Image 1 (cartoon, rainbow, N blue to C red):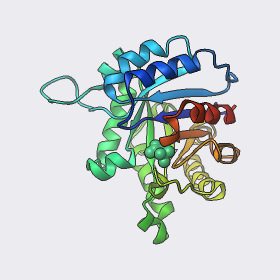
Image 2: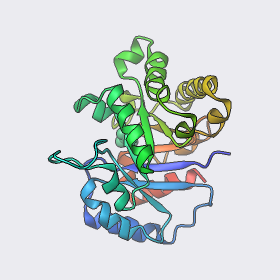
Image 3: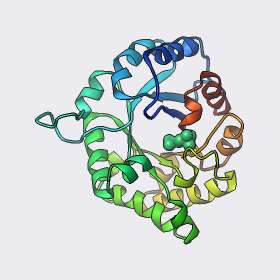
Image 4: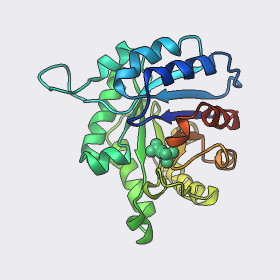
Length: 249
Ligand code: PGA
């Protein structure tokens, strides 16, 4: 049985005020024990969030990090620092990082290993662009991104990963993949995982991301291979995010 995970990626949005408001709103939340919820704010809000989320069902995530150990890397944040502030999850390979910050599959792989080494749960983000989709390359691109990481991991590392399938054309556009489209690709991911290891394919959580909102979450989450959501825009509003978490219960 896979426990659903709903993760809210705030991207470069937020404020201390918003962190506090989420802490208060979720303090009394009584989700079925079978839903995990994480909020992923920008770095500066991690200490305030760790405090505000204590005693709530909200776990803490980070949006990226530098896989190198401490040292002369001005402006960077390493995995140990995230752990020190109570971070459990870290996004790796988000399409915005791949597209605008030049992160390659090799970089993504290095980060996944460093995250696992530090005890963080990497949320490996994969997904095709609109051009790749139109060229009929969705399956190859997505499975290629998954394989680029999985091939380098030991079995004991693979089982600690979460994979988020986020079609790039659906991110922040308001255009959501239909439940059937999302299921088709996510089913391919699970089938590919089964070629590595059947037990892994059964237990590894696959999240859908890309314009998930309160109005479409239930339908998406009802698909057999969708075990949760990576939510951007809709995770900034308490009511919307709360409703999405409830749909996963
Ligand atoms: P969106 O973003 O929900 O705003 O489309 C999802 C994401 O980028 O993780």
